[in-house]
Length: 113
Length: 112
Image (cartoon, one colour):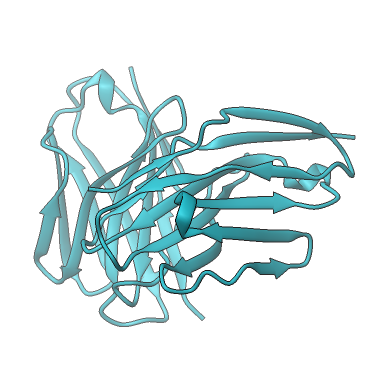
């Protein structure tokens, strides 16, 4: 069975600050996939990134970057120079050998102007 | 491009009434389909998934059921709603088994 822990429940920052969202996962599968989703106030989950377990290369997409470390079972997400539009609930998720996508409890980010 | 639709967007129903939520996907064939519920507190719970027409897998035993009458249609139903069924219901689709899931806009259900 898989498990995802997002220890932070809420974070509040001021615009232009950098913020890192932590994600720690547990799995016994050797092949698995990690995901980050964003849920703005409208409610719809927006896919941000997928990472395969055999690809530890970090990724950067604009102001977003992801740090995948198998040694610590972590898949952290950093937003650089945060903006008000980044305010949302962010979910980390894992899928192993089954159809099931297991989500963390989410982390609410508030970016204040 | 693919799009996913859900309706209704919001619903207020009395306890004991029936429920039918519909989800349809456009622009793809034979997708895997999923129903999730997000209760107060933000956690997402997988309720059902389907890998093909008429194939339904249930993750959580409860008074809800799901059906997939057509390739790109997924329906969530209940014969008698409970107060605990209130929540935000999200439908999702995935093309490849290891691919990312894409979510619909959701239905906010309030049972009174």
